[in-house]
Image 1: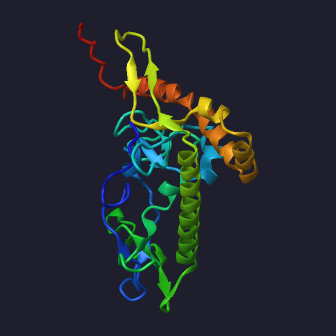
Image 2: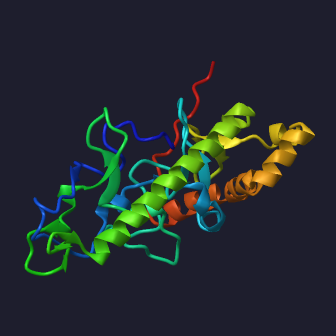
Image 3: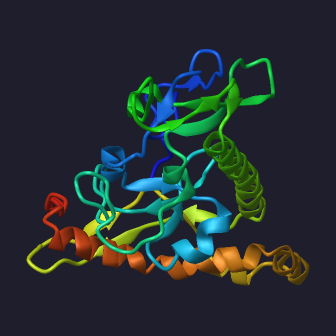
Length: 259
């Protein structure tokens, strides 16, 4: 249900090329009016700075695998986002994760042997080009205020990503993550819908933590983040109900064969 993307490129991105004052000196950037890629995203990476506001709108879970990441669930099945129309435009007042808002830009290494990150973009997005209209990217060879703001936003996102990684490592170190499972009984269905493939924090293990470990989590601000995650989990059933209302319900589960 919520596996981390396994592509060579991050979720949404089809290619990456560095933004250059020489190659793109005359280029302009347009507003991203539609986001069909977002309309098909059922799970999007989330940073810990976003937990408190995000938990009001959708469930926060953790991906499975060796390096789990927090994910905002917009749907329970691949290709389903209950919060947008087919063009990726929000159909209600929800919080849009920073991961979505930074597209088509991101910071990336140009070579594996260097640590420096460069501002890159997805050329297939169609919002950067040698257009007649749009906002200039460079003036007299210098980045415009728009580019500087984009760079600052991407840098903040990278820093938030580092802090999020440290948070997840704390969860792993204290053995708090467990496999999640949600069983939903739907009217008109003989068999329940069962969702797996994600991780959650174990409330039982959280209660059993030593006092000094729990105190450290309180002092570091990690405990409120865990609570935000836990408070968001009942929204899984709301997401399922929205899928049913929108005609995006999954296939009916098959009966379990008799032994």
